[in-house]
Length: 343
Image (cartoon, rainbow, N blue to C red):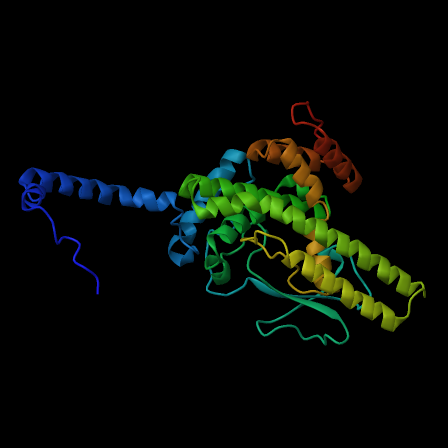
């Protein structure tokens, strides 16, 4: 049994505590605490877990407003919503011993909500329900509208960045890597403006560029290892059974490495969506040049606009080789030197 804590309480002290002046002071303190409660919750990171249909357009407006300040090309992406779960269903596939270095070189047919009409025994297949596409007029799909706030804030500027004129003449590997970094940085800034520096959304998005860099290093390393394996197989230096066994081991190693990345990302998958050649080739499109662009971000002291300006300057090139050379030069510079536009 718990003893009464006020057994020896002084009657005089009790009368003082119940006096009108003390009661007024207590009430004033309670009133101030109630007024401060919303700001305390906000500073503790009390932000929504997903945008939902009610406030997704509000977030789109916030992203578009910042994009205008940053010089993004204006688009009509996400201005209208659709009740469809995805904007399209794609089936990427390739051979068991074929590893293209971009999704542009994968074979592609249309799928349905139910999946792909392909036999996975004959091909490595990646079924991709597309929740957004940077075509300048992408609808806001139901799946994206109910994603986490972090993913939503990254996807919107990612797709808008694809409309940059600098990307039109370059392979997808340049566009996806630069749009990925632009999405992280722009999304984080919107989170800072909208939810505050102590919000969990902002804290999470601040970490994404570095986490994706770690993923990119793992994916790129695995890609190179498997590419060499298939070269050896086609050259007759390894049997089919041994090549299949080594392939499985390499994908097992990839899974172990990427799932060990901590902290866990909040706007993208730490591992390829499917661990086969099609899934790896798809992710390689995003990761191939990301480490180089991440170095540019670090050389610009993790600043949003200087990083985006540097990327657009480097990608304003007449060829893939020229763009790559520009990126390498900028990655080595400290951000204070005048840079060539690449043209």
